[in-house]
Length: 197
Image 1 (cartoon, rainbow, N blue to C red):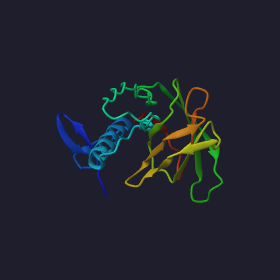
Image 2 (image 1 turned 180 degrees about the vertical axis):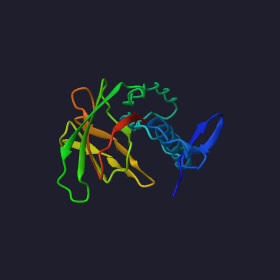
Image 3 (image 1 turned 60 degrees about the horizontal axis):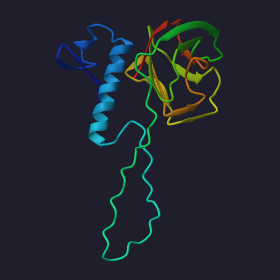
C-alpha cells in the first residue's frame, strides 16, 4: 500500500501519520498529497501525465541525386496540446437529501458542484464530514455520452473522501454541465470541501 505525503513546514509528512492526523486533513491537504503522489509516480515511471503531441509523420521526399548535398530540413512547429485548466477554478457546492432505495445505506444525498470553467480533463477530490458507503459521480446528473480514462471511488482508509477523474468526457464538467455526486451513508452527511488537482 502506498502512502500519500505532503510537504508542511519545509519537511515531508506522511498524510496518514499519527502526528498529521491530530487534525483532520482538508480537501486541499488531500489534493496536495495526491499531486505529490502523481508527481512521484510520474518520476518513477518516466511517463508524462499530460497529453502527448501527435507523432511527427515523415513527408514524402524525392530521392537526392548523388554528389549533391541534401537541403537542411525546415524546423516544424510543434502541434499545441490541450492543457488542463488552472487549478484555481471557482467551485460552488449545493446539496440536498434524497430518498435512498438501498437497504445498506438509509441516507442518500445529492451533491452538486458547479464551476466557472470547462475541464477537458479532471482530477477531483471531495471530503464529507462522516463516512460514506458509496458514491456515484455523473456529469450533468446523467451518464455522460462518452468518457475515457475514468476512475472514481471512496478512499479505503478515509471513507469520507471521494475521488473522481477522467481523461476526457463528452460533455465535460463545466458551467453548463455541473458535477453531480450521489452519496450514500448510514447517517446524514455534509460534503463541503472540494478541490481539483
